[in-house]
Image (tube, rainbow, N blue to C red; front, side, top):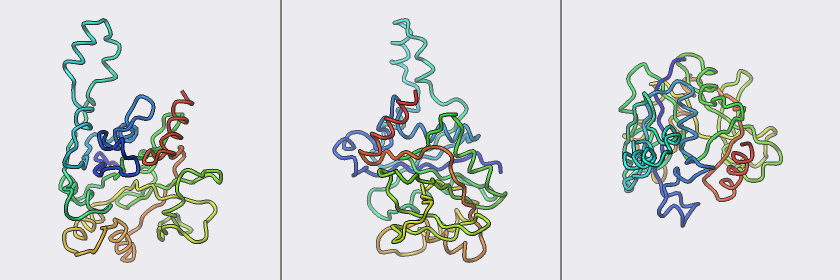
Length: 274
């Protein structure tokens, strides 16, 4: 399947990481020398994505600054004989970026940023959706986004799952993916009473066809919900009507920067491997 666009929601205060997220956007917290968001962006680029729609909060500025040219810094590096650093701070080449603002008041939940970004997707197109405060690390530098896209049949939907090792005590065991014998999604169960083995975690990374994307938009625009607008509500409705969502097992190490423990583990894995 040929997919060239990705929606990456990064709005929110990152309350699990307060007080540092008072001044640093949660997706900009570094793992090694790169912000968390850039691991997802680079993974998308390896999969052939050349247009990214970031859904950001009203006060967001750092992510824009990170992906644009910094002329004073470039001049400094050139004046001081440090030109070798220029590629590290260069803007993304050949990639179109959009920034959609999600209001801090009003509707909220995992479906809302996807609905807001849907205006950039044309009829007949499919899109990748990647949440921005966790990521996969592959020592061979392969792309989980590419793996997901390649495994989803043309015109269908897909969901990426992380198979958690038994000794994983950092990553929360919630969002358990259940699939049928053909590898299609049956349901996602939050906080299952009986922990399945293996535990396949929903990491909120999807391929959505245009019909599924419009179902998410219609759900947010048309329905009145007391509380959060969960993206799986329209997913489940269309699956009941015959849409399929292929379950794809990731091969890389899932790392969650949203908690302090997860962030420390992410730095240990990434920096240790290097």
